[in-house]
Image (spheres, rainbow, N blue to C red):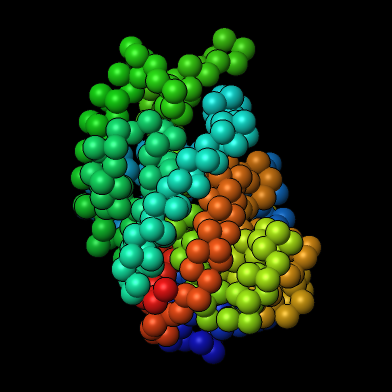
Length: 407
């Protein structure tokens, strides 16, 4: 019997606000736990999670079972095109398809391209902070965290500015399904399927335009990328456009929101950061990623029976490696429940590990470093106005819903 039974029920229904006591109990008592409501295994210890993220021979990346198994028969039929599409996102591909896609995308999504975009990120941050400062009191999440990464990734992809709001709102209808799990998926599958159909129509036109008239943007660069005579297909380009937005937006929104909350709720840490930005900014961002991991899970399926800890997981059963739990494991981190911006080294797995290490990790770090440097310099006396913080209800993303501040 799970001691934190109420927390467990809320977790299965994507309603749990503070998962860390449940994570701690599972790590100590059932580090490999079969979750019947969600139809998957939960893995919570750091060493087991890290080993799972490294494994490529006995584990494949697939969300088929995670999405389909909890659905009603009617919703399964509705969801199949949606699940097929999400399984085409890069983090859900397996070698050799993953190797091929990543190689081609890396020809377009280069470190040089990211560094070239830094001045634009700085301008976007300054513009949004101008609006924050002008209002004195505002919801920082909606005024800054939500729009900043969206503007950045939309501009990088080459989505026209006139379409930014529509693109963001349409994808927002898809994300509760892609970042969800368990029985609650039945509540969002119809809306998500409609959003996918709309996005398919939109990108058909946009990709056609880029084939005919290439621009200085990521979609054009990906369409032109070639290695050993191989290029990305139209379907792969469509999947990458949605994946890169998902990877480059929602997770960075979470990183900005939780990072701001952590600084404001630990004022002594914020003072430390402001006193030595050059030294502490990078480790602070890494601690945000560890302490409140934006992506708290990674999903795999065994292609052969596989030991996890001292038990075997059968072929074909979904495993959820709990990154958020691993990053608070006392076996891996001293005083793991203590927020410490000077923690170094910080071997968190917030961006995953191995072949599926987050493609957008460098972009997320750039955005976070630019944003928190500007925050520390421009609104050094910012205060949190409301301590009753609510977190988004999704197992696949850890993000605040609002962050009311006074500058």
